Length: 385
Ligand SMILES: *Cc1c(COP(=O)(O)O)cnc(C)c1O
Image (cartoon, rainbow, N blue to C red; front, side, top):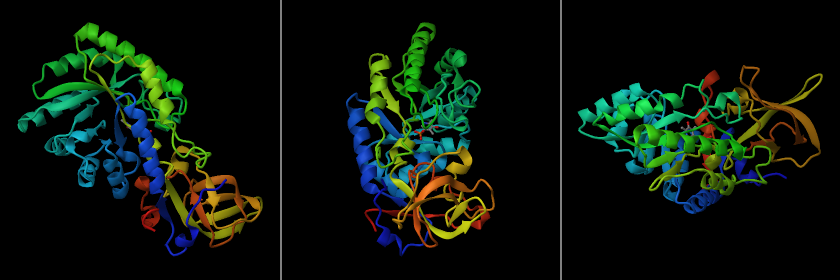
């Protein structure tokens, strides 16, 4: 089954470009909000997945908040319309300039990753006569069973404060006047498809809350479980909206929230992956001795995930109904890793055909680069064509 695309309209647009299905984005947002509302959970969209202005505005209009990992993301969210108190700011290396920008916008919370960072935030907040709300990111040592480059919750990763160190860091925070501890933050990885990983996270948080309460007497207001829900890259047409029902259910069934505690989460990929497609035109079909290569005008500079994470994206020839044949689909960049897919069955393909590289809305456009002095891909939206 192929996706449906306005191929006729694509003919007049210079390729490659990103095409966003805004109806699907809205459907996805509606699903997230109705499932989260069942339990009173708060959602912050992880902006790093896609910071395109229209996408951000649409997400902002839906009413959910934003999870940022740089000062520029905080600034982009403010421009897109997010209120300061809907923004959280994470990251292991926030600079003074970024912290000051976030303080000036009175953001909801800094997700902090070290004692050193807490000290700096306290000083910068003091200079502005403010009290910064912080949540400590804890490294729960939970294996997300995903690609090594997107596993973040193991003790060996650079992220967060290790479990054993947490009580001391909490006690330290209590001595400071310009930071207020409002939460604990966790994020175990990305493209997680086994709900058991989230279940394991819940168990870890339950134990940790017990331990923390015993050792420090502290009960925080917010528990932030991060992002990481995966999407179906193999069958984007079949499951175009991620399984938010099961996702939220796992937390409601396994996480023991204390009285007055609110659960927060930060989905990125699952919000935007399926609504985005990289549209590219075939420049050449090259017959090698053993393989046929489809050489597209898009490359790893437009979508780096296959080269960087070995990820799979479904590829469709949306301008051909011919017999299926086997091709390697590659880009024009001078790197052997510039391959979108090997041994793919595509309808018979010729020069000039248009391909859709599916599920490219997350970590696609935002990761594009100018390597080889390429032009950055533009974005088009289904409701504007
Ligand atoms: C990347 C990231 C997210 C979003 O992850 P997805 O897999 O895109 O849902 C959420 N929280 C933090 C802290 C992150 O680093």
